Image (cartoon, rainbow, N blue to C red):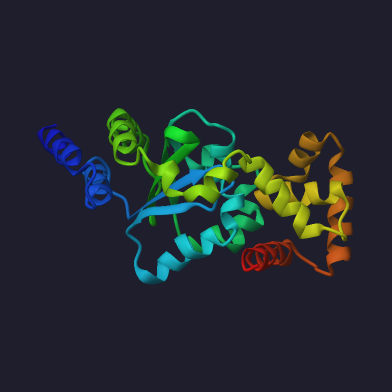
Length: 264
């Protein structure tokens, strides 16, 4: 308890300094060990902002640089921000769709991270921005005790982050703030419309979206109010029109389209 009190004091002292995020990570390490920390700022449809990370260079490319190029649109944490999730601490598995760990986002991108588990604090900020502080383990998942103890520290995490990043929305710049009126859902919908424009029907684009997010045919059917068999027919038509044979190729085409769009 004494160490935690001392760590909290150091954390408060670090607010407004360049050492704040590292001090926060170290304080949380004192509660439950983990391998990596990354803190992203989100504002509406704007590209996520990397506020802090402690990845080695090779892993940073996957976790941060590649992520910012487009895969974030399928990230359960990013999508949870769009759903206005209640602030607090969450496991990624509790926010992910039913087939997330069998889906192409997981296989083609997330599996490359080599993580055993990721949990995240969701902190609401002024101006509709959100800070997501992710704690990652490479070897084993957080135990129920670890999760509970980290959850007990939530009031401190929330208070210090809100003070340190109180101007986060302004940091995104004028253009990003103008885009903040566009919801995350609108951003994703636009990405998929642009991806299949002139080739796929609106229904086929919807099937692509929910499939890449990690929803099963049954789940997509429930969302779109069609049968799982119809979902599978739409998938086959998508593959035929795009001249691909697998969900992996579909994911690659989607990411390539996002990267190409961002370059223009």
